[in-house]
Amino acid sequence: MTKKEQYFTDWFQRESVQLLHGDCVNVMAGLIKDKIKVDAIITDPPYNISKDNNFSTMKNAKRQGIDFGTWDKGFDLFTWLDVADKLLKDGGNIIVFNSFLNIGNIAKYLEAKGYAVKDLIRWLKPNPMPRNMDSRFVADYELAIWCVKGKSKWTFNNSTDSYLRPEIKCPCPSGKERLGHPTQKPVFLMEELVKIFTNKDNTVLDPFMGSGSTGIACIKQNRNFIGIELDDTYYNMAYKRIFNDI
Image (cartoon, rainbow, N blue to C red):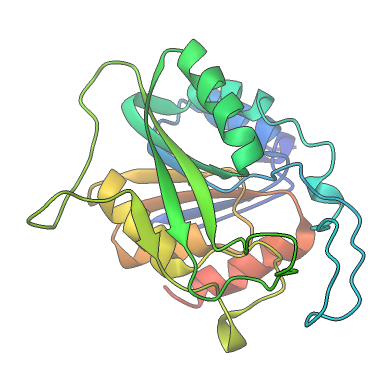
């Protein structure tokens, strides 16, 4: 058994991209042993909010919850952060998408570890998922928390001539862009985050790679990418999607 096989189910590297198939906690522990350091972590972990659905039709649905799958149920929101912390350079940015129900707890957890909590980033969706308009607001945004490790200078690239608002407006993937992942993020969204929080040739880690949007964003913006994914289907989906873009 080789060193990589001890903590990776599968591993592939080409040019600036490294994909790792396995549990992110185990894989990151292996990367730590290999003395890997990354400049930023940009990721969309499970939110642990899945509930059973009670759909009738999308037009007139009485929505009591949403079920993303077993991977979103009983997920530990914090243990992975302890391991990822050892990979992130001092002054490195970490951007974590999550439910508004969890964002505050994640911020407090990172703050207790010595991170500076900088801001909430909003992804605004012009085409949100339909909801029962008689009982709920439509969920037309998602949130990410931005924190910085330690006290070193962090990367923040404002390419505008004015204040940069902490919001990115772009549609959810649809049509041919929509793949089989239930929480797929748009490449445009991830590209904007990569441009703001990293520099050319920096290394970005996504411990919950999913369909690979962060990886494609890194390729387009000339960043190095390390992606980790546990699920067989999504790992293969990301592999095909990313390497077709190289």
